[in-house]
Amino acid sequence: MSSFTCSSNGGNVLDALDKLLIRIDESGLTRHDRLILGLDRHCSQAKTPMSILKKDDRASSFDVLSSIFLDTDISNSQYSNSSVISSASSRRVSFDSVHIRSYDRCVGDNPSCRHGVPLSLDWNYSESHEVYKLDDFEIERYPTRSPASAIHKNARRNILAQWDIDEKEFKMCRQERKRVQKQRAMTRAHVRVGEIAADFKSRVVPKRKLSKRKILNYDMDEYYSNTLRTCVSNRSIY
Image (cartoon, rainbow, N blue to C red; front, side):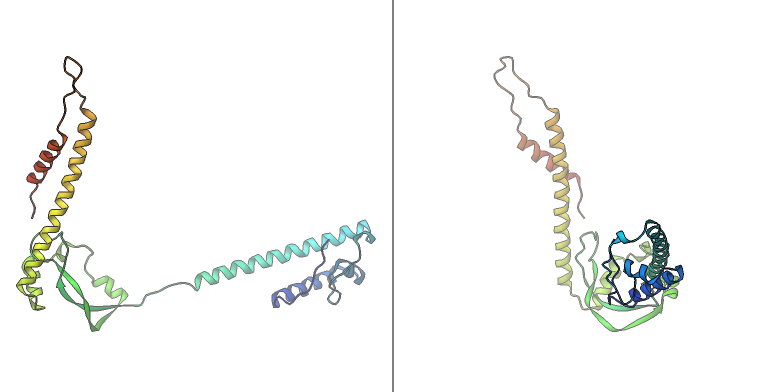
């Protein structure tokens, strides 16, 4: 049986040992029994063999120790649960106000804009900002993704004109937008051609002549080019 040792790991360990010794004193164990079990305050390592104890004494000592250890485990588990709850409650996050600051406007690069020039936010912003309470902001804010938030092309043009955007930059932006849209249309057309070609290869079976020596060749390159030309011509690009 391993003996108990008093070490300076902290106040909690010493308090637990003090409570343990008080329970043992109340249980009626003699000093001789405490020395043998290694539970004395001043004699922490007892080397007396277990064989000198009688069978009845060892049984009673083990019963007392098991009850003490059970109470100690229950108290420790309750303390750990309370510490976990307190630590979880101390990690709460709360918000009080919302700060809104204004950014400059600039020409954007969104190719999904079909008409006019796309509008975007610049990196520069105003140092002064508005502050709202969180509850008031949630009540008064506009719905998310509302159709009313879309800006007409003329309104976008007037907004950009206020930020000294010239006509040359408008033209360059429109050309870039059309170029990106054309690339995306070609990508979609190539994907469609690939699907048609894969379906064509899976369905076509080589036809043989009567002599069974020559196979009719299919000009796949011409087929691909014709299909691609058809897909691109049928799709209008804005």
